Length: 449
Image 1 (cartoon, one colour):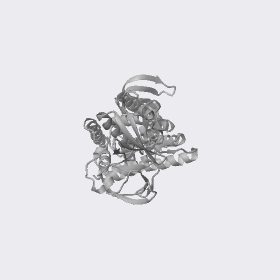
Image 2 (cartoon, rainbow, N blue to C red; image 1 turned 60 degrees about the vertical axis):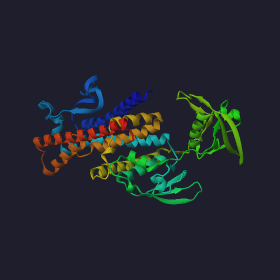
Image 3 (tube, rainbow, N blue to C red; image 1 turned 45 degrees about the horizontal axis):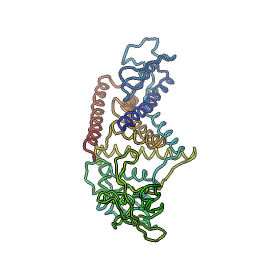
Image 4 (tube, rainbow, N blue to C red; image 1 turned 30 degrees about the vertical axis):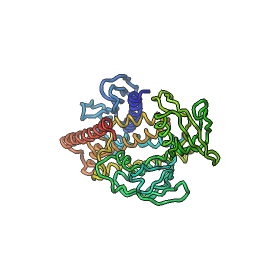
């Protein structure tokens, strides 16, 4: 699928699922609190599909799929028939109103736990935390060597590459020196410190990661397989050969081997490939072929494949998967609050805010990696929506909850003038956040890091 169309499609799937679940939370609790629900809408604007339920609720899907709402019987919006006073929202106790408003974020949280649980049940596939450092980078200066296996970061055990990125990303938000323990290819363990406190202020986590120079370890220089009928096989190379040189130039890893094949074949297609087989050095004269593979742009190839990366699959039974889901929900909740907190106190840049543009791109990427990866993404977005909606900003669920808590403390509702003023403040804050998020994503598209 075209990347743009794929991003749009998976964004709509993501918003459709999560918004529906969020609004269903409001709807379900409102009905059980005796409030009449007039409309349940997925999306805004012109209705594309409507149906009147037996409960008197109008269900609809609207043209703008960037949200949704539940419209309840509310005297603040229209005059209410006296016979329906017992089903009107504002006449319910403050505790019932709190329950109705809190239900949306709560259902997003429930969805998060379920998505992570199902992901661990299906099996979360990841790569092992084998790392390397770009030459002359901060990571290289800190002592990172190609092929190091990360054992712990900041005192927390690491089992996958994604775990490593999550912990490093949290530390990058505040630019804090980060201790880590690695095991080298020689089996020896080393304690290192990434001096993240030396990074300049005002950049996003993605920009910091590039500057840090930390990356997954490249595949070793081994011909894992040699394709039948292609130049390497015709010259006598075999799967398992350790790649040593190309035209006398030494090879450090499989990526470097591929680069050398391309650059040397551009000068002359006849290559001298040095390998080691069963401890013996051998040389093969290979006639490289310039061709397109699987629709990709044409390039020089000889027909050898890299070893598959070491995988780390987290696959559990129901009970263990639920435990892992709760732990992941807890850790990611802490990470999101960490990001918001550090942006508020100025430690982290607002460049870390992202809009639906970024969500669409990540949705498409995660969906292409399989259902388990998409569940991981859905769970994270659902958790983010739950936390965002609980922020004490008028117009969000958290703003309404703040009003009701004030009502509990003072014994009466806030006056209408104060609430309207709060709505304007909330709208200004939301538009500012959305504007920053869209600016960041558009800027990254035009001027990528």
